[in-house]
Length: 311
Image (tube, rainbow, N blue to C red; front, side, top):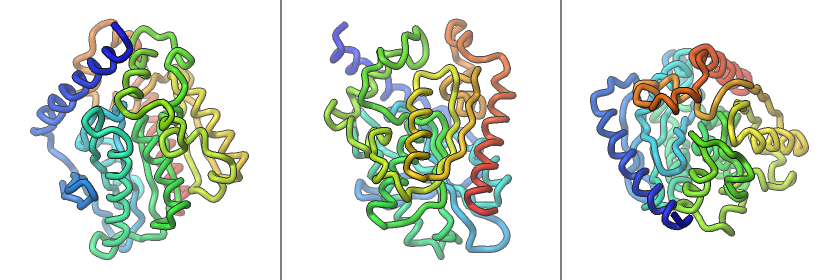
């Protein structure tokens, strides 16, 4: 199979997975409220978990992962609920358009526009504009990090923190330079997801691969917390990003989970979708103590959010 054929096949598979994911989520009982958010592309879905108590309250914008081409906003309800209950913040899960039908920068535009909307309607939603944070996983971690860059450069809004779980930060280098794995995020998967998302030259830009942002461009962006998985093709770019943040004087908290595999937080906290249908071969790649790892990982992110948001 040629690389272009592999990309086309991955795109077809991604569409099928999104359709199946949405259907699966139809019967989910959500702790937040679904709302429609106006973006330049039209209305996009969000799930809002309003802060209790004193208002205005800080807000954390959560962005799910899925290779820029898969996933659905309902998936991380359990994780968002834990953040919401633990911090007392408003928490808002954001949906976005996905490749291959909507390649870069479509998804990024959607989450940027959504953050702008809630910033502009802060009074309506009980949001403290001075205490906003992004929180993303994998491809969502890419968006969360890029939004911090965009906040600094556009001045459209400001962020107190960027919370990045095993973020995808380098879409430029070839998959084989990251991994030789035969399951999960293989080199072939990494290349295919890149190929349906953006062309090679575009993927070197900081708004798609923030690991290539210069120290001057990173200087003054929101403080970062990064979860790094030891068994993850993306671990090196996360470690590189930590150093880049430090070189630019950006406060950063990082924790590495040596035995954790990519996606472990989402895999556990939405295990009904991510784990219960795995093949025996795929299940063998998941640590036996994933529950313990996921609980520790989420606890780290929550503590980082509290620290940076001054809760």
